[in-house]
Length: 426
Image (cartoon, rainbow, N blue to C red; front, side):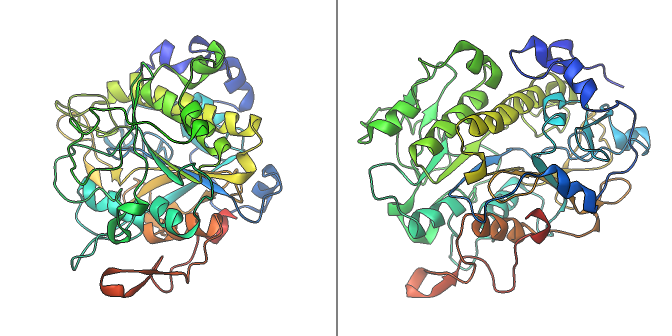
């Protein structure tokens, strides 16, 4: 088993927040072979929920996290399946996650896991990104709009604040040329997200989303932003150092903090791409050899970055009084293959993966669905990407029967007829 990097595994070495001792207090580190999928007592961990949320933060875990090495550990599987990370108990009895997420283990009473997401289309990044962010695949000349763009169309803001912001910018090079599911599609440019590029030095460069999928030359100028409140949301110079440390000194950490400030300003939908590129840098795309990532990168950089920033975001929303008003959904475009490949990594696997949901009317401390013994397929309560889209729209108060004006003035429902939200999350 790979030893965890002490700096990565011990939150006390990365700024304020729970220490390793706090994690141990949250529950024993004993291996838990099974987790609860439906248990009446889990509801007691969740505070009273709002009927609807007013906003959503969608975190796209670009590259596709390995569910087995993250939020659906398989400690009883053979070594070539279970991987290098052991399980850790969490604040909720019966729910274990990977030891790579010590912060999250202390927040599981506020977070719910859906462990049975799957799709049956081709296992490439683009199809998964379309399905998870729009609820559909493009086809017949129709490019479907991102959910944030749907919200822009149906819930406009009267003042100068944008409705939908895409951080730090659109997904760039991931190997294909198809849509990444982040455009306004048939709704038109009027409802495209504000798409700023935020680098670790906090430089902010704004543009409207480009039709190009290559982002290297999209952000060469700094147009003015009319809304002073939105401008201030990107200015982190007055934030306390301990808060910046809590989010982590990464682009993703800064974007999570900016997202919380944007929601406070009145922005209704923020999409955060954890990575805009999966080549020659750490990402969730752990094929095991260059130009992709490895288990070592996952252990040392990817998991610690997500663990710190994601839980800091939940904490910050709580401090600002916004947690009960904001749905926070985090997921990738697919999972990873159960069997470790010859390069020591895992390959694309849309057969089963896990998503995280919190905030707004979402109940915490629950596990919805179950994968089989090796994490290859749903064993219980399979969930389609369209149900994820329906859950988010329902949670922020958009009736699923709502129709949009598609190409040729044809009406297109926001989700396909018969698709329902994941009721167990509420």
